[in-house]
Length: 425
Ligand code: SIN
Ligand code: CO
Image (cartoon, rainbow, N blue to C red; front, side, top):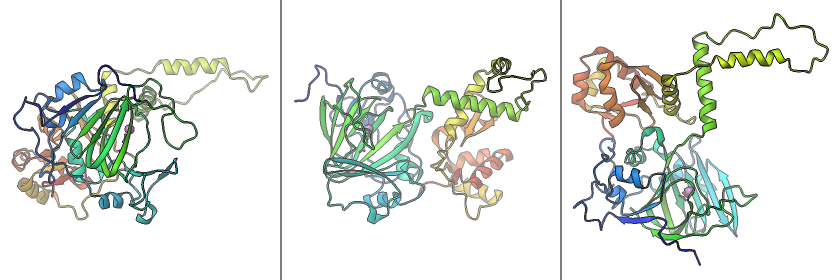
């Protein structure tokens, strides 16, 4: 029998039953948004979070405890159909994994998968996981955008899983926060705050050796489960189903250290500060050539001790590092780009939006777009709005285009495939 804690491990809320607002703050996701989906404002109760405000959610649950939200997105539609997901899994640049649990044996294969490489739909107990769907589809990106009450710097991707009856990835834990949104069919989730996170040895995937579920629910389309890191969980499909995972990124201290030092070294090199070669005019002849000279250690120590950085170096590093597109990302520049005048003419009629793959962050002094740093001046306040809203109205563009440097910059981004003219189709 599963152990039942005195307090339920996950609190359950329902957008339907809450008396706090008379109607959900978000519309059902019945068709793609005409413009990028704006996140709920921090202090507005939202159905997405069971009629909590994003501020309340962040304060009480984020990184702290699970939350089950019934009807987070009433009437939700899967951003991609099953066949569209399978098509995506067949593409080279898409990260796809197939997990099977046939005859009690876990197996993992990496994509791409041609349609005939996937098990039959009638076969039970298999799952296809497709990572980074937001990079390939505007509907998936729009769904991810609903979660932008968490800073973009922390948002990772939207993964979609398709499972045949009884499919799942086994009981496991993740090191990152995740929202698990059921978009098609039903899935039974069991979770546990157990301390024992020992994994079964010799398996191709992370499966817990001793899973002791404490809570369980069947999620239907529109229901969502939030899990902070390290909560053990197991989701098993009841009939075929699809689940969207909104995942977050949290770089480890060692990754940050290594990348920051690399950033400093590159910066120093481009400023010509670190290119001087090590020299040792006083090195005597040695009897024991294999021995590391103590003077060498001392001199390199002195070089390293000269490394200095300030807060702006940290912000520059984080902005460029976190806005860097994933290695698989390739932008699609327009095949026959409009010249600057025609681009301005079109944008004046239809506005602009960031390409779904574009990362645009900023701090007090710089903008960071797809890994590049741009110094800004006071006149660039519009870039804040563009970064936050991921779109710019035609009216705003008309006003801004009086400054030819703005049009030139936006035209450059358009030619690189970083922004698109017009609204979403
Ligand atoms: C799934 O969608 O099947 C797995 C997601 C997860 O457990 O993190
Ligand atoms: Co998981």
